[in-house]
Image 1 (cartoon, rainbow, N blue to C red):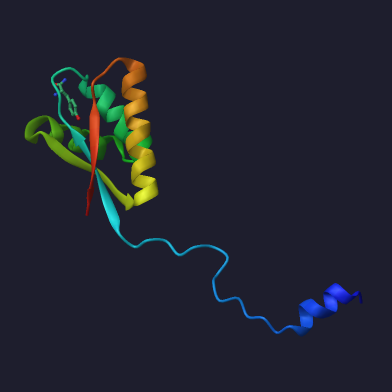
Image 2 (cartoon, rainbow, N blue to C red):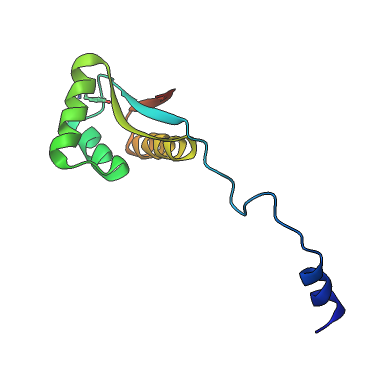
Length: 106
Ligand code: TYC
């Protein structure tokens, strides 16, 4: 046993912090906003692929947004919500559609 190992084992140090930081329990809604130009089928496809919704649920969410101006696509921890919202923006921008989202505390 080398000196370093012996010191490691002998110092009796107890980690005061876990290796991974605990997740913030606050949840955030990713809200889809209506506009007059994004095709309905594009919104349905995005909701299915980005928010892992069934075709029927994605259609329901799209119609909620279309009729009421906004609708919740999903509820997630901050980093997940932020990533999904920016994926929507990138997909819409690449396709030339104005579809936008907001993030709100749940
Ligand atoms: N209002 C759009 C249309 O009539 C459809 C739409 C639905 C757009 C939901 C955005 O988040 C949205 N083509």
